[in-house]
Image (cartoon, rainbow, N blue to C red; front, side, top):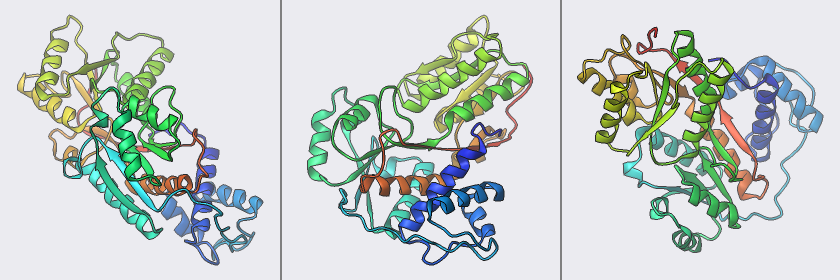
Length: 361
């Protein structure tokens, strides 16, 4: 997939991550050799050298042998005050057993990463995500864990707004809603959406539709906006709507697909955000006798173990979960020590996994 961020941004992000690891004491006397660092950070050597140059200018590392590893010139400074008790709460609309496989993998990685640094992770399901006014429920949770760092997973606008107003350290795992200023970590869904649209556009598709449930998540809004912006830059030769919603059930999605197929100008390319939507769309179109990709092309914007079992193989985007969780863990530790600004954001690039569900319009 084509990278939309300049190399300088990756160098700065890599420098920030190395700086955090030095502060946390992960590296004692010197950094690993360049080859190992490139593998750990999954970046090119030129990018790593720019990152090391940044740290050298800041006084964190000394100039020196590239093959043997840079000597650490600055020692971690002790924190005068830490807001967190070491407790991290991942607040979610679903309990741990009900989370999808992809999220469970991320939770396990995050728990292990935080445990190494002395933090405890607990997953808490709350009805606050299902109500319009969650203040009472959230206040009750904060009273129970008054010094925790909160990670908001699949969070609604009302939940994000409450934490943005409250004096509580919180990070969004996903994208914030418009107007919400909280630090967040997510895959670069806008870049993935624009790459998907560009791929379909090159195949002659002009009627491209995003399918997602009515539940408003910040990521859905970012994806729809990114799609629309790219299509407009390509000349505006596309049909509305770019994004359509269903009621969140399998039956609701099937009804929506029936409506789209019955339209006088049915969409010839579909994008899905949820794994269940991708599975239902592919199987229901086949059930209806609609060929994929002969009649309709399909791209899934995320990754899940289930996707690899579908036939035909679905074109989709895969993120390196290890990188995402490392960045999230680092942000949690910064948030716990009061070092993270409200506008701090981390977007991790995705890889395009070519499948068999894209055909010419």
